[in-house]
Amino acid sequence: MTTAIRIEQVYKRFGSVHALNGVDLAIQPGEFFGLLGPNGAGKTTLISALAGLSRPDSGRLMIMGFDVEADYREARRQLGVVPQELVFDPFFSVRETLEIQAGYYGIDPSRQRRAWIDEILENLDLTSKADANMRTLSGGMKRRVLVAQALVHRPPVIVLDEPTAGVDVELRQTLWQFVRRLNEDGHTIVLTTHYLEEAESLCGRIAMLKAGQVVALDTTRNLLSRFSSHTLRLRTASDKPAQLGMTQERITQENATQECTSGWWTCAFAHFDEIEPMLARIRNAGCMIDELEIGKPDLEDVFVRVMQEQSHEQVRAA
Amino acid sequence: MNSLSIKPSRGFITLFYKEVLRFWKVAAQTVAAPVLTALLYLLIFSHVLASHVEVHGVPYTSFLVPGLVMMSVLQNAFANTSSSLIQSKVTGNLVFVLLPPISHSEFFSAYVLASVARGLLVGGGVLVVTTWFGGLSYAAPLWILVFAMMGGAVMGTLGLIAGIWAEKYDQLAAFQNFLILPLTFLSGVFYSIASLPPFWQHVSRWNPVFYMIDGFRYGFFGVSDISPWMSFLVGLGCLLILSSITLSALKRGYKLRA
Ligand SMILES: Nc1ncnc2c1ncn2[C@@H]1O[C@H](COP(=O)(O)OP(=O)(O)OP(=O)(O)O)[C@@H](O)[C@H]1O
Ligand SMILES: [Mg+2]
Image (cartoon, rainbow over all chains, first blue to last red; front, side, top):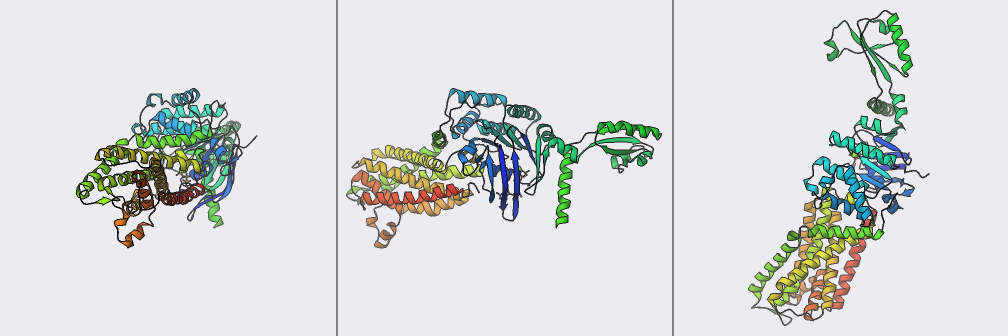
């Protein structure tokens, strides 16, 4: 099967900034792929190169097997991009905007085209705004139109650059439902977002970008288990947990207000079946537990760890 | 899955249509206002000068009308491409045109043809409202059309170059004030270059706009400073040079796909 997106050794500099510093990625058809990274990591630059909006200094990018430069017509037909910036054409209504966008992709006006546009409008809850001028829409509504514009030509590969920035909870839910369905229908989805819970629940695989380089690339599940783990937290007055390998949390403002005789202890574990023996040991040590929590691994931990590790490596390399 | 019928030419047609729609939606500004401006020029200049001058044996007012019509064609063609492009760049909505599979030559022709359309529309408007000044003949209508379209295309292309190059509105304004305005005003819109001192006659012959206005005027009166064929060749040469510059810039993605 053709790779949906293939990125080979892509470099792009802006003056002294290495926005992309040798990026390699391959994304398979049907994947729901997350592209994460701090501000300025190069996510948007990579998407622009993929969409032909900017030319990389070197390297090769392909969409569904079509080179974005040599085969740009086919490559662009395969790709729908929701840009990060909230852009719109103030001269047109929502429907005009979508009809025109469909036309740009060579789609003839027809009953099918109209029906498809109606379906997109419906799915993004825009039907009531179809004839409103773009200028009169709220920010979140404009964002929905951007999503709609990316879908008019039914691209097999859809790239969303922070589609939920400035969007209310309700649309977030509807949008994700819609995008999930597109993914289930076989569309390849690439998503960038700073909401890590979103990426965690949606993406099957994640690449983390930092300073123009891919610093982590794996399935979401592997990332979570490799860099993060479940934690057992408990509060007790005893200091026995220390002998059992737990670490005492530093006294912060928050837990200082609690009875000073008791403190929070944590330990990490990889599997749930490690919990029971641990609790048994604590009980056998004769220690009273006042409170107990189990923390789930989350992508935020992973993200923070990956980014920190990178910084340490960079310091060492320097 | 894909039941939508695709025709490659549709992209070009849509871009052309969108460019026409863009100015048509604000026709009061883009069509009516320039017609009024031309009318004001005509009223003032013809009143002040009509009794004094006759050019090529034609009363001054009649001589002036084709010049004003052509000036309107040229200026509006330039304004259309340049303002459309700079607006799209500044607001960022140019991505909607850059993302789809539209080739650089389709992009070029859609923008330029739309600017020719606006030029012809405004020029036609000026012609209509000035007919009652009278004295206009139509000696060679085909030349009228040829020069109007060629002039519009040359200026539309120049507008595209300006729009691609400029990053801010004031850069575009500079282009307009220091290049387009002098070229059009010093081209014989208001006078025949035969009435200029020899030095300025010589300078005018380096101004391509002069040839287009002169050729255009030939279409009305059947007389001109230069043979219309010569003017045609100069205009065509300009169009070819400017088009190849623009096409190669678009192909390289100069500024637009940096
Ligand atoms: N047109 C440009 N000119 C100069 N520098 C640029 C340009 N575009 C991007 N950069 C720089 O390249 C780097 C990567 O930017 P990019 O927009 O790709 O980051 P990002 O990962 O999308 O960040 P964010 O999360 O903030 O959207 C940044 O340092 C940015 O300043
Ligand atoms: Mg970005």
